[in-house]
Image (cartoon, rainbow, N blue to C red; front, side, top):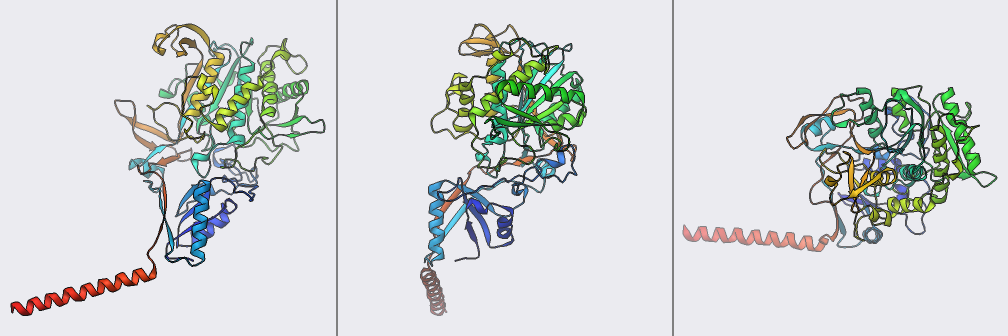
Length: 561
Protein backbone atom coordinates (compact mmCIF):
# COMPACT_ATOMS: atom_id res chain seq x y z
CA UNK A 1 0.00 0.00 0.00
CA UNK A 2 1.46 3.34 -1.01
CA UNK A 3 1.12 6.89 0.17
CA UNK A 4 2.34 10.18 -1.28
CA UNK A 5 5.75 9.61 0.41
CA UNK A 6 7.05 6.06 0.14
CA UNK A 7 10.11 4.22 1.45
CA UNK A 8 10.90 1.13 -0.62
CA UNK A 9 12.35 -1.97 1.06
CA UNK A 10 14.31 -3.98 -1.53
CA UNK A 11 16.74 -6.91 -1.65
CA UNK A 12 20.30 -6.78 -2.91
CA UNK A 13 19.15 -8.41 -6.16
CA UNK A 14 17.37 -5.11 -6.92
CA UNK A 15 20.45 -2.96 -6.23
CA UNK A 16 21.02 -2.32 -9.93
CA UNK A 17 20.55 0.54 -12.38
CA UNK A 18 17.26 -0.82 -13.81
CA UNK A 19 15.43 -1.24 -10.49
CA UNK A 20 16.86 1.95 -8.99
CA UNK A 21 16.04 3.82 -12.19
CA UNK A 22 12.38 2.78 -11.88
CA UNK A 23 12.30 3.88 -8.25
CA UNK A 24 14.03 7.16 -9.12
CA UNK A 25 11.40 7.93 -11.74
CA UNK A 26 8.65 7.54 -9.14
CA UNK A 27 8.34 10.90 -7.37
CA UNK A 28 6.57 9.22 -4.45
CA UNK A 29 9.73 7.29 -3.48
CA UNK A 30 11.64 9.28 -0.85
CA UNK A 31 13.92 6.54 0.46
CA UNK A 32 15.25 3.02 -0.11
CA UNK A 33 16.26 0.44 2.50
CA UNK A 34 18.52 -2.53 1.63
CA UNK A 35 20.22 -5.26 3.70
CA UNK A 36 23.94 -5.00 4.40
CA UNK A 37 24.50 -8.63 3.45
CA UNK A 38 22.90 -11.44 1.43
CA UNK A 39 19.84 -12.78 3.19
CA UNK A 40 19.55 -16.48 4.01
CA UNK A 41 18.07 -18.39 1.10
CA UNK A 42 18.90 -15.68 -1.45
CA UNK A 43 21.76 -15.50 -3.95
CA UNK A 44 23.27 -12.38 -5.46
CA UNK A 45 25.98 -13.66 -7.84
CA UNK A 46 26.69 -10.31 -9.52
CA UNK A 47 26.77 -6.97 -7.76
CA UNK A 48 29.46 -4.52 -8.87
CA UNK A 49 28.31 -0.89 -8.56
CA UNK A 50 31.28 0.38 -10.57
CA UNK A 51 31.25 0.92 -14.35
CA UNK A 52 32.14 -1.64 -17.01
CA UNK A 53 35.52 0.11 -17.48
CA UNK A 54 36.32 1.66 -14.09
CA UNK A 55 38.11 5.03 -14.22
CA UNK A 56 37.92 5.01 -18.01
CA UNK A 57 38.22 8.79 -18.42
CA UNK A 58 41.39 8.94 -16.32
CA UNK A 59 43.23 6.03 -17.93
CA UNK A 60 45.28 5.50 -21.06
CA UNK A 61 42.47 5.39 -23.62
CA UNK A 62 39.36 7.36 -22.56
CA UNK A 63 37.58 6.29 -25.76
CA UNK A 64 37.94 2.54 -25.20
CA UNK A 65 34.75 0.50 -25.46
CA UNK A 66 36.24 -2.67 -23.95
CA UNK A 67 34.28 -4.19 -21.07
CA UNK A 68 36.53 -5.32 -18.21
CA UNK A 69 33.85 -5.39 -15.52
CA UNK A 70 30.97 -7.30 -17.11
CA UNK A 71 28.94 -7.09 -13.88
CA UNK A 72 29.36 -3.33 -13.55
CA UNK A 73 26.09 -1.44 -13.11
CA UNK A 74 27.55 2.04 -12.69
CA UNK A 75 25.14 2.88 -9.86
CA UNK A 76 27.98 4.39 -7.79
CA UNK A 77 28.01 7.31 -10.21
CA UNK A 78 24.26 7.81 -10.59
CA UNK A 79 22.51 10.85 -9.02
CA UNK A 80 19.54 9.38 -7.15
CA UNK A 81 17.10 11.81 -5.54
CA UNK A 82 16.29 9.66 -2.52
CA UNK A 83 18.14 8.56 0.59
CA UNK A 84 19.52 5.02 0.70
CA UNK A 85 20.34 3.15 3.91
CA UNK A 86 21.85 -0.29 4.42
CA UNK A 87 20.41 -2.05 7.47
CA UNK A 88 21.74 -4.85 9.62
CA UNK A 89 19.88 -8.14 9.48
CA UNK A 90 17.52 -7.54 12.42
CA UNK A 91 16.58 -4.01 11.32
CA UNK A 92 16.13 -5.13 7.71
CA UNK A 93 13.86 -8.01 8.68
CA UNK A 94 11.85 -5.59 10.81
CA UNK A 95 11.51 -3.22 7.83
CA UNK A 96 10.28 -6.06 5.61
CA UNK A 97 7.74 -7.16 8.19
CA UNK A 98 6.38 -3.62 8.53
CA UNK A 99 6.26 -3.16 4.75
CA UNK A 100 4.32 -6.42 4.45
CA UNK A 101 1.97 -5.29 7.21
CA UNK A 102 1.27 -2.11 5.24
CA UNK A 103 0.67 -4.16 2.09
CA UNK A 104 -1.85 -6.22 4.08
CA UNK A 105 -3.72 -3.08 5.05
CA UNK A 106 -2.31 -2.23 8.49
CA UNK A 107 -4.24 0.64 10.07
CA UNK A 108 -2.69 2.77 11.29
CA UNK A 109 0.06 2.31 8.71
CA UNK A 110 3.74 2.00 9.54
CA UNK A 111 6.04 4.83 8.48
CA UNK A 112 9.82 5.32 8.38
CA UNK A 113 11.96 8.36 9.04
CA UNK A 114 15.35 8.42 7.28
CA UNK A 115 17.94 10.95 8.34
CA UNK A 116 21.22 11.38 6.45
CA UNK A 117 21.57 15.07 5.62
CA UNK A 118 24.63 16.24 3.67
CA UNK A 119 25.62 19.77 2.67
CA UNK A 120 26.23 19.08 -1.01
CA UNK A 121 26.12 21.76 -3.73
CA UNK A 122 25.92 21.21 -7.51
CA UNK A 123 29.55 20.18 -8.24
CA UNK A 124 33.02 20.10 -6.66
CA UNK A 125 33.95 23.67 -7.65
CA UNK A 126 30.74 25.09 -6.13
CA UNK A 127 30.85 22.87 -3.07
CA UNK A 128 34.48 23.79 -2.30
CA UNK A 129 33.84 27.48 -2.85
CA UNK A 130 30.93 27.42 -0.41
CA UNK A 131 32.95 25.47 2.13
CA UNK A 132 30.61 22.46 2.11
CA UNK A 133 33.13 19.84 0.87
CA UNK A 134 36.65 18.49 1.26
CA UNK A 135 38.69 16.67 -1.39
CA UNK A 136 38.77 12.90 -1.36
CA UNK A 137 42.28 11.75 -0.60
CA UNK A 138 44.62 10.12 1.85
CA UNK A 139 48.21 8.93 2.07
CA UNK A 140 50.31 6.86 -0.29
CA UNK A 141 52.93 4.64 1.32
CA UNK A 142 56.37 4.21 -0.28
CA UNK A 143 59.13 2.03 1.12
CA UNK A 144 62.64 1.18 -0.01
CA UNK A 145 63.01 -2.53 0.74
CA UNK A 146 66.79 -2.23 0.85
CA UNK A 147 66.47 0.17 3.74
CA UNK A 148 69.16 2.58 2.57
CA UNK A 149 67.02 5.00 0.61
CA UNK A 150 66.67 5.42 -3.15
CA UNK A 151 69.93 6.71 -4.62
CA UNK A 152 70.44 8.54 -7.91
CA UNK A 153 72.97 5.97 -9.15
CA UNK A 154 71.16 2.61 -9.02
CA UNK A 155 68.28 1.35 -11.16
CA UNK A 156 64.82 1.04 -9.63
CA UNK A 157 62.37 -1.88 -9.49
CA UNK A 158 58.84 -0.79 -8.57
CA UNK A 159 56.24 -3.03 -6.93
CA UNK A 160 52.77 -1.46 -7.02
CA UNK A 161 49.45 -2.15 -5.27
CA UNK A 162 46.46 -0.14 -4.12
CA UNK A 163 45.27 0.61 -0.61
CA UNK A 164 41.64 1.54 -1.14
CA UNK A 165 38.32 0.25 -2.38
CA UNK A 166 34.84 1.70 -2.53
CA UNK A 167 31.23 0.56 -2.46
CA UNK A 168 27.72 1.98 -2.62
CA UNK A 169 27.93 2.25 1.19
CA UNK A 170 31.40 3.40 2.20
CA UNK A 171 31.45 1.67 5.58
CA UNK A 172 31.25 -1.64 3.69
CA UNK A 173 34.12 -1.03 1.26
CA UNK A 174 36.15 -4.09 2.27
CA UNK A 175 37.47 -4.67 -1.26
CA UNK A 176 38.87 -8.13 -0.51
CA UNK A 177 39.80 -8.98 -4.09
CA UNK A 178 39.60 -5.45 -5.48
CA UNK A 179 42.35 -4.07 -3.25
CA UNK A 180 43.28 -6.22 -0.24
CA UNK A 181 44.55 -9.16 -2.34
CA UNK A 182 47.21 -7.06 -4.07
CA UNK A 183 48.11 -5.15 -0.91
CA UNK A 184 48.52 -8.35 1.10
CA UNK A 185 50.70 -9.89 -1.60
CA UNK A 186 52.91 -6.79 -1.74
CA UNK A 187 53.43 -6.92 2.04
CA UNK A 188 54.20 -10.63 1.68
CA UNK A 189 56.90 -9.75 -0.86
CA UNK A 190 58.47 -7.30 1.61
CA UNK A 191 58.43 -9.97 4.31
CA UNK A 192 60.07 -12.55 2.03
CA UNK A 193 62.82 -10.13 0.88
CA UNK A 194 63.63 -8.95 4.40
CA UNK A 195 67.44 -8.76 4.64
CA UNK A 196 68.08 -9.94 1.05
CA UNK A 197 70.91 -8.26 -0.91
CA UNK A 198 69.45 -6.05 -3.66
CA UNK A 199 71.55 -4.44 -6.40
CA UNK A 200 68.72 -2.19 -7.58
CA UNK A 201 66.55 0.05 -5.43
CA UNK A 202 63.35 -1.95 -4.81
CA UNK A 203 60.48 0.38 -3.95
CA UNK A 204 57.03 -0.73 -2.82
CA UNK A 205 54.49 1.96 -3.77
CA UNK A 206 51.00 1.60 -2.28
CA UNK A 207 48.45 4.06 -3.62
CA UNK A 208 45.44 5.56 -1.84
CA UNK A 209 42.34 6.87 -3.62
CA UNK A 210 42.73 4.69 -6.73
CA UNK A 211 38.99 3.98 -6.88
CA UNK A 212 38.46 7.67 -7.66
CA UNK A 213 40.41 8.52 -10.78
CA UNK A 214 43.74 7.07 -9.60
CA UNK A 215 44.22 9.83 -7.03
CA UNK A 216 47.25 8.21 -5.38
CA UNK A 217 49.24 7.14 -8.45
CA UNK A 218 48.51 10.43 -10.21
CA UNK A 219 49.75 12.29 -7.11
CA UNK A 220 53.06 10.41 -7.25
CA UNK A 221 53.50 11.07 -10.98
CA UNK A 222 52.54 14.71 -10.43
CA UNK A 223 55.36 15.02 -7.90
CA UNK A 224 57.92 13.21 -10.04
CA UNK A 225 57.23 15.40 -13.06
CA UNK A 226 57.44 18.62 -11.03
CA UNK A 227 60.94 17.96 -9.69
CA UNK A 228 61.73 20.07 -6.64
CA UNK A 229 58.56 22.17 -7.08
CA UNK A 230 56.41 19.57 -5.35
CA UNK A 231 55.86 21.51 -2.13
CA UNK A 232 54.22 19.48 0.64
CA UNK A 233 54.14 16.39 -1.61
CA UNK A 234 57.94 15.98 -1.94
CA UNK A 235 59.59 12.64 -1.18
CA UNK A 236 63.11 12.57 0.25
CA UNK A 237 64.32 10.42 -2.65
CA UNK A 238 65.45 11.18 -6.17
CA UNK A 239 62.99 8.76 -7.77
CA UNK A 240 63.37 9.10 -11.54
CA UNK A 241 61.11 7.10 -13.89
CA UNK A 242 63.97 7.11 -16.39
CA UNK A 243 65.95 4.81 -14.10
CA UNK A 244 63.15 2.28 -13.62
CA UNK A 245 64.31 -1.18 -14.65
CA UNK A 246 60.98 -2.95 -14.14
CA UNK A 247 57.48 -2.38 -12.76
CA UNK A 248 55.21 -5.12 -11.42
CA UNK A 249 51.71 -4.20 -10.29
CA UNK A 250 49.67 -6.64 -8.25
CA UNK A 251 46.03 -6.23 -9.31
CA UNK A 252 43.11 -8.48 -8.43
CA UNK A 253 44.90 -11.68 -7.42
CA UNK A 254 42.73 -13.18 -4.65
CA UNK A 255 40.47 -15.50 -6.69
CA UNK A 256 42.70 -17.41 -9.13
CA UNK A 257 41.64 -20.42 -11.12
CA UNK A 258 43.71 -23.59 -11.44
CA UNK A 259 45.15 -25.53 -14.39
CA UNK A 260 45.16 -29.26 -15.08
CA UNK A 261 48.12 -29.66 -12.72
CA UNK A 262 46.09 -27.99 -9.95
CA UNK A 263 48.43 -25.01 -10.00
CA UNK A 264 47.08 -21.51 -9.47
CA UNK A 265 46.97 -19.52 -12.71
CA UNK A 266 47.74 -15.81 -13.13
CA UNK A 267 48.05 -13.62 -16.21
CA UNK A 268 50.45 -10.83 -17.14
CA UNK A 269 48.93 -7.79 -18.85
CA UNK A 270 50.99 -5.12 -20.59
CA UNK A 271 50.41 -2.16 -22.83
CA UNK A 272 53.44 -2.39 -25.14
CA UNK A 273 55.54 -5.20 -26.55
CA UNK A 274 59.18 -4.28 -26.12
CA UNK A 275 62.34 -5.99 -24.92
CA UNK A 276 61.94 -4.64 -21.40
CA UNK A 277 58.40 -5.96 -21.01
CA UNK A 278 59.36 -9.32 -22.50
CA UNK A 279 62.29 -9.65 -20.11
CA UNK A 280 60.01 -9.02 -17.11
CA UNK A 281 57.43 -11.52 -18.38
CA UNK A 282 60.12 -14.16 -19.04
CA UNK A 283 61.46 -13.81 -15.49
CA UNK A 284 58.04 -14.05 -13.83
CA UNK A 285 56.99 -17.03 -15.98
CA UNK A 286 60.24 -18.85 -15.19
CA UNK A 287 60.00 -18.10 -11.47
CA UNK A 288 56.39 -19.31 -11.51
CA UNK A 289 57.50 -22.61 -13.04
CA UNK A 290 60.20 -22.91 -10.37
CA UNK A 291 57.66 -22.20 -7.63
CA UNK A 292 54.72 -24.32 -8.83
CA UNK A 293 52.48 -21.43 -9.93
CA UNK A 294 51.31 -21.08 -13.53
CA UNK A 295 52.07 -17.57 -14.80
CA UNK A 296 50.94 -16.86 -18.36
CA UNK A 297 52.15 -13.92 -20.43
CA UNK A 298 49.27 -13.12 -22.75
CA UNK A 299 50.15 -13.28 -26.46
CA UNK A 300 49.38 -10.33 -28.72
CA UNK A 301 46.08 -11.79 -29.98
CA UNK A 302 44.74 -12.18 -26.41
CA UNK A 303 46.31 -9.13 -24.81
CA UNK A 304 43.72 -6.39 -24.27
CA UNK A 305 46.26 -3.98 -22.86
CA UNK A 306 46.40 -3.37 -19.14
CA UNK A 307 43.21 -3.52 -17.08
CA UNK A 308 42.16 -0.55 -14.91
CA UNK A 309 45.23 -0.11 -12.71
CA UNK A 310 47.60 2.36 -11.10
CA UNK A 311 50.11 1.59 -13.84
CA UNK A 312 48.01 3.67 -16.23
CA UNK A 313 49.09 6.83 -14.39
CA UNK A 314 52.77 5.96 -14.78
CA UNK A 315 52.42 4.99 -18.45
CA UNK A 316 50.78 8.31 -19.27
CA UNK A 317 53.99 9.96 -18.09
CA UNK A 318 56.40 7.31 -19.46
CA UNK A 319 54.75 5.25 -22.26
CA UNK A 320 57.77 2.97 -22.79
CA UNK A 321 58.11 2.00 -19.16
CA UNK A 322 58.88 -1.75 -18.87
CA UNK A 323 55.86 -2.75 -16.83
CA UNK A 324 53.25 -5.50 -16.35
CA UNK A 325 50.11 -6.00 -14.29
CA UNK A 326 49.59 -9.42 -12.73
CA UNK A 327 45.96 -10.47 -12.28
CA UNK A 328 43.74 -13.51 -11.81
CA UNK A 329 41.76 -12.72 -14.97
CA UNK A 330 42.79 -13.29 -18.58
CA UNK A 331 40.33 -10.72 -19.95
CA UNK A 332 37.13 -9.73 -18.11
CA UNK A 333 37.15 -9.62 -14.30
CA UNK A 334 36.70 -12.82 -12.34
CA UNK A 335 35.54 -10.78 -9.35
CA UNK A 336 31.79 -10.19 -9.78
CA UNK A 337 31.74 -7.81 -6.79
CA UNK A 338 34.43 -5.35 -7.96
CA UNK A 339 34.30 -2.24 -5.73
CA UNK A 340 31.14 -3.61 -4.16
CA UNK A 341 29.91 -4.31 -0.64
CA UNK A 342 29.99 -8.11 -1.12
CA UNK A 343 33.69 -8.25 -2.09
CA UNK A 344 34.70 -9.87 1.19
CA UNK A 345 36.68 -13.08 0.55
CA UNK A 346 39.96 -14.21 -1.03
CA UNK A 347 42.04 -17.37 -1.23
CA UNK A 348 44.70 -16.91 1.46
CA UNK A 349 46.95 -19.89 0.54
CA UNK A 350 46.95 -18.77 -3.11
CA UNK A 351 48.08 -15.29 -2.06
CA UNK A 352 50.92 -16.79 -0.03
CA UNK A 353 52.15 -18.80 -3.02
CA UNK A 354 51.86 -15.75 -5.28
CA UNK A 355 53.79 -13.58 -2.79
CA UNK A 356 56.66 -16.05 -2.98
CA UNK A 357 56.58 -15.91 -6.79
CA UNK A 358 56.47 -12.12 -6.79
CA UNK A 359 59.29 -11.87 -4.22
CA UNK A 360 61.54 -14.21 -6.20
CA UNK A 361 60.70 -12.34 -9.41
CA UNK A 362 61.52 -8.96 -7.85
CA UNK A 363 64.75 -10.40 -6.42
CA UNK A 364 65.77 -11.65 -9.86
CA UNK A 365 64.87 -8.37 -11.57
CA UNK A 366 66.80 -6.42 -8.93
CA UNK A 367 69.95 -8.54 -9.24
CA UNK A 368 72.49 -7.36 -11.82
CA UNK A 369 73.14 -9.99 -14.47
CA UNK A 370 70.26 -12.25 -13.44
CA UNK A 371 67.36 -13.24 -15.68
CA UNK A 372 64.96 -16.00 -16.69
CA UNK A 373 67.85 -18.30 -17.63
CA UNK A 374 70.14 -17.21 -14.82
CA UNK A 375 68.50 -17.05 -11.42
CA UNK A 376 70.47 -15.31 -8.65
CA UNK A 377 72.01 -17.36 -5.85
CA UNK A 378 69.72 -18.12 -2.94
CA UNK A 379 66.45 -17.60 -4.82
CA UNK A 380 64.85 -20.77 -3.47
CA UNK A 381 65.45 -19.55 0.07
CA UNK A 382 63.16 -16.58 -0.55
CA UNK A 383 59.75 -17.69 0.71
CA UNK A 384 56.81 -15.81 2.14
CA UNK A 385 55.61 -16.84 5.59
CA UNK A 386 52.00 -17.97 5.16
CA UNK A 387 51.22 -17.22 8.81
CA UNK A 388 52.23 -13.62 8.09
CA UNK A 389 49.86 -13.51 5.09
CA UNK A 390 46.99 -14.88 7.15
CA UNK A 391 47.76 -12.33 9.86
CA UNK A 392 47.57 -9.46 7.34
CA UNK A 393 44.27 -10.77 5.96
CA UNK A 394 42.88 -11.07 9.49
CA UNK A 395 43.56 -7.37 10.03
CA UNK A 396 42.40 -6.07 6.67
CA UNK A 397 39.28 -8.24 6.28
CA UNK A 398 38.08 -9.12 9.77
CA UNK A 399 38.99 -6.74 12.58
CA UNK A 400 41.52 -4.07 13.53
CA UNK A 401 42.05 -5.67 16.95
CA UNK A 402 44.05 -8.43 15.23
CA UNK A 403 47.36 -9.64 16.74
CA UNK A 404 49.49 -8.02 14.03
CA UNK A 405 47.87 -4.61 14.57
CA UNK A 406 48.34 -5.01 18.32
CA UNK A 407 52.03 -5.77 17.80
CA UNK A 408 52.33 -2.45 15.97
CA UNK A 409 51.18 -0.62 19.10
CA UNK A 410 47.50 -0.06 18.24
CA UNK A 411 44.71 -0.89 20.68
CA UNK A 412 41.09 -1.35 19.63
CA UNK A 413 38.11 -2.60 21.57
CA UNK A 414 36.17 -5.62 20.41
CA UNK A 415 33.28 -3.31 19.44
CA UNK A 416 35.41 -1.21 17.07
CA UNK A 417 33.88 -1.11 13.55
CA UNK A 418 35.16 -3.73 11.09
CA UNK A 419 37.71 -2.68 8.45
CA UNK A 420 36.65 -0.53 5.52
CA UNK A 421 39.11 0.74 2.93
CA UNK A 422 37.24 3.74 1.57
CA UNK A 423 39.74 6.56 1.05
CA UNK A 424 37.86 9.29 2.98
CA UNK A 425 38.58 13.02 2.80
CA UNK A 426 41.98 14.71 2.84
CA UNK A 427 43.32 17.09 5.46
CA UNK A 428 46.97 18.13 5.75
CA UNK A 429 46.89 17.97 9.54
CA UNK A 430 45.14 14.65 10.18
CA UNK A 431 46.99 11.38 10.60
CA UNK A 432 46.80 8.67 7.97
CA UNK A 433 43.70 6.47 7.99
CA UNK A 434 44.03 2.98 9.40
CA UNK A 435 44.71 1.17 6.11
CA UNK A 436 47.73 3.26 5.00
CA UNK A 437 48.90 3.51 8.64
CA UNK A 438 48.84 -0.29 8.93
CA UNK A 439 50.73 -0.77 5.64
CA UNK A 440 53.25 1.92 6.56
CA UNK A 441 54.00 0.45 9.98
CA UNK A 442 54.29 -3.12 8.68
CA UNK A 443 56.76 -2.00 6.00
CA UNK A 444 58.64 0.16 8.50
CA UNK A 445 59.13 -2.80 10.83
CA UNK A 446 60.09 -5.17 8.01
CA UNK A 447 62.65 -2.88 6.39
CA UNK A 448 63.95 -0.86 9.32
CA UNK A 449 67.10 -1.14 11.40
CA UNK A 450 67.01 -1.14 15.18
CA UNK A 451 68.48 1.62 17.35
CA UNK A 452 68.60 2.38 21.04
CA UNK A 453 65.89 2.46 23.68
CA UNK A 454 63.27 5.21 23.57
CA UNK A 455 60.12 6.54 25.14
CA UNK A 456 59.01 8.83 22.32
CA UNK A 457 59.84 9.03 18.60
CA UNK A 458 61.61 12.32 19.33
CA UNK A 459 64.20 10.25 21.23
CA UNK A 460 65.23 8.53 17.96
CA UNK A 461 67.66 11.11 16.60
CA UNK A 462 70.18 8.99 14.65
CA UNK A 463 68.17 9.69 11.50
CA UNK A 464 65.27 12.06 10.68
CA UNK A 465 62.99 9.10 9.95
CA UNK A 466 63.21 7.35 13.32
CA UNK A 467 60.20 6.00 15.19
CA UNK A 468 59.82 4.65 18.71
CA UNK A 469 58.13 1.24 18.61
CA UNK A 470 57.68 -0.92 21.73
CA UNK A 471 60.44 0.96 23.57
CA UNK A 472 63.02 0.73 20.78
CA UNK A 473 64.03 3.02 17.89
CA UNK A 474 63.44 1.84 14.31
CA UNK A 475 64.98 3.67 11.35
CA UNK A 476 63.36 2.92 7.99
CA UNK A 477 63.10 4.41 4.52
CA UNK A 478 59.30 4.16 4.61
CA UNK A 479 57.31 7.32 4.01
CA UNK A 480 53.85 8.72 3.54
CA UNK A 481 53.07 10.86 0.52
CA UNK A 482 49.93 12.97 0.24
CA UNK A 483 47.37 11.58 -2.20
CA UNK A 484 45.25 14.50 -3.44
CA UNK A 485 43.09 14.80 -6.60
CA UNK A 486 45.38 16.34 -9.21
CA UNK A 487 42.54 18.49 -10.52
CA UNK A 488 42.40 20.34 -7.18
CA UNK A 489 44.88 22.61 -5.44
CA UNK A 490 45.05 24.37 -2.10
CA UNK A 491 45.32 28.06 -2.93
CA UNK A 492 45.46 29.41 0.61
CA UNK A 493 46.77 27.89 3.85
CA UNK A 494 45.97 28.80 7.43
CA UNK A 495 48.84 29.43 9.87
CA UNK A 496 48.17 25.99 11.35
CA UNK A 497 49.00 24.35 8.04
CA UNK A 498 45.44 23.33 7.25
CA UNK A 499 44.10 24.29 3.82
CA UNK A 500 41.78 27.28 3.95
CA UNK A 501 40.72 27.36 0.29
CA UNK A 502 40.59 24.54 -2.25
CA UNK A 503 40.02 25.27 -5.94
CA UNK A 504 39.53 23.32 -9.15
CA UNK A 505 42.61 23.97 -11.31
CA UNK A 506 42.18 21.25 -13.96
CA UNK A 507 38.67 19.83 -14.51
CA UNK A 508 40.05 17.15 -16.85
CA UNK A 509 41.85 15.56 -13.89
CA UNK A 510 40.19 14.00 -10.81
CA UNK A 511 38.28 16.58 -8.74
CA UNK A 512 36.44 14.21 -6.40
CA UNK A 513 35.07 15.71 -3.19
CA UNK A 514 32.79 14.60 -0.37
CA UNK A 515 30.23 16.82 1.31
CA UNK A 516 30.10 17.41 5.03
CA UNK A 517 27.41 15.40 6.80
CA UNK A 518 25.01 16.57 9.48
CA UNK A 519 26.37 15.97 12.99
CA UNK A 520 23.32 13.91 13.92
CA UNK A 521 24.60 11.09 11.72
CA UNK A 522 22.46 8.37 10.16
CA UNK A 523 19.05 7.41 11.49
CA UNK A 524 16.27 5.07 10.45
CA UNK A 525 13.22 5.17 12.73
CA UNK A 526 9.97 3.21 12.37
CA UNK A 527 6.70 4.47 13.85
CA UNK A 528 2.96 4.20 13.30
CA UNK A 529 1.00 6.99 11.69
CA UNK A 530 -2.39 8.01 13.01
CA UNK A 531 -5.31 5.86 11.82
CA UNK A 532 -8.02 7.26 9.54
CA UNK A 533 -10.49 7.23 12.42
CA UNK A 534 -8.09 9.06 14.70
CA UNK A 535 -7.47 11.63 12.00
CA UNK A 536 -11.22 12.14 11.41
CA UNK A 537 -11.82 12.39 15.14
CA UNK A 538 -9.11 15.02 15.50
CA UNK A 539 -10.56 16.99 12.57
CA UNK A 540 -14.03 16.82 14.07
CA UNK A 541 -12.69 17.79 17.48
CA UNK A 542 -10.86 20.74 15.94
CA UNK A 543 -13.99 21.83 14.08
CA UNK A 544 -16.06 21.57 17.26
CA UNK A 545 -13.49 23.58 19.14
CA UNK A 546 -13.56 26.26 16.44
CA UNK A 547 -17.39 26.41 16.58
CA UNK A 548 -17.38 26.68 20.36
CA UNK A 549 -14.71 29.36 20.34
CA UNK A 550 -16.57 31.29 17.63
CA UNK A 551 -19.83 31.05 19.58
CA UNK A 552 -18.10 32.21 22.73
CA UNK A 553 -16.69 35.25 20.95
CA UNK A 554 -20.11 36.18 19.52
CA UNK A 555 -21.74 35.76 22.93
CA UNK A 556 -19.16 38.03 24.58
CA UNK A 557 -19.55 40.66 21.85
CA UNK A 558 -23.34 40.70 22.26
CA UNK A 559 -23.09 41.03 26.03
CA UNK A 560 -20.63 43.90 25.81
CA UNK A 561 -22.72 45.75 23.22
